[in-house]
Length: 287
Image (tube, rainbow, N blue to C red; front, side, top):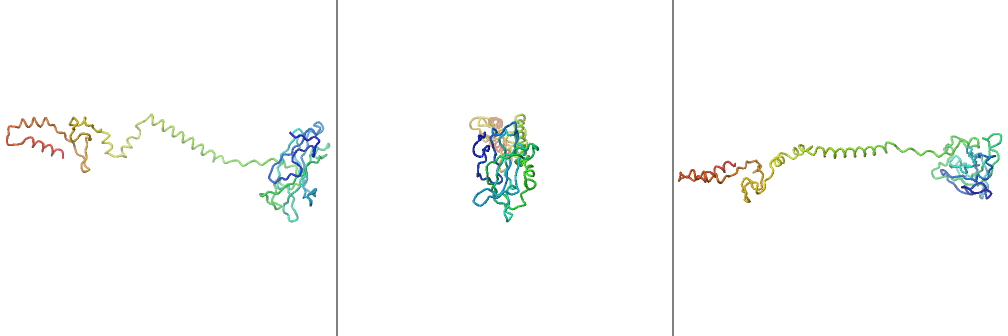
C-alpha cells in the first residue's frame, strides 16, 4: 500500500523521480488514496506529458504528445502502465530518441467528467528505446494513431496484449496417442489372459514341421524307451522320429525274447542260423 500523504512528489509512490524505463516494459503507477477526498474526487486520471530532455538534464521541452488513462477509482491506488514506442519523440533526423515523461494525477472537471481539471504534479521519468524497437518514425502505430493530446490518447487503455494461444493440436495429439497406447496395452493383457493359446498355430507354422513333430511326440527319458532299463539301446533319450542324412526313418524296436522263442522253434534245422537271419531281417526293416 502506498504511503506518501505529504512527502516528496506526494501522493505518488512509484515510479520514482528520474527512473529510466525501456519501451516494452510495464510499470505500476501508485499513489496514496488518502491524499484525495473520496467524496469530492472519487475518480482520477493518470496523465503524462512527453518531451525531449533539455541539455544538461533539465526539464524537457514539452512536445505535442501526451497520455491520459481512463478514469480510475481513487481508492484503487494503482494503475498499470505499458510503455509503448508511440510515446517516444523523434529528433531532427526522424529517429526516436530518449523521451522525458512528466506524470500527473488529473482530477475530472466539474463541468465535464471526461475533461481534466486540476492536475497534481508527479515524478519525472525517462523513456528509452529498446533493442527491439524500430527507431524510425512511422512504424509505431500501436495506438492506432498519434498520441497528440489527452483526448486522442485517452483511447489507449494500456491493457497488455494477450499472449498468443498455444497450438491446441500440438497439445492434444500426444495426450490422445498416449491414452490410446495405454488402452491397447491393457486390451492385449486382458485378451492374453482370456485366450492363452491364441497365436500358437501361427508360431508353429513359422517354426516348421520339425518343431511340430517334437511337440506332438515328446522326448522319452532313459526309462521310457522302447527298450526299458538304464541301457535303453538305440531309442534311449531320443524321439520316436529320427533323422539320418536329413531323411525321416522309422524306429523299429527289437523284441529279444521273441527272437529267442523263434530261434528255439526253428531249432530243428541245424544247418541254418535262425537267430542271425532274424537279426538281418530286422536290420533291413529299419532302412
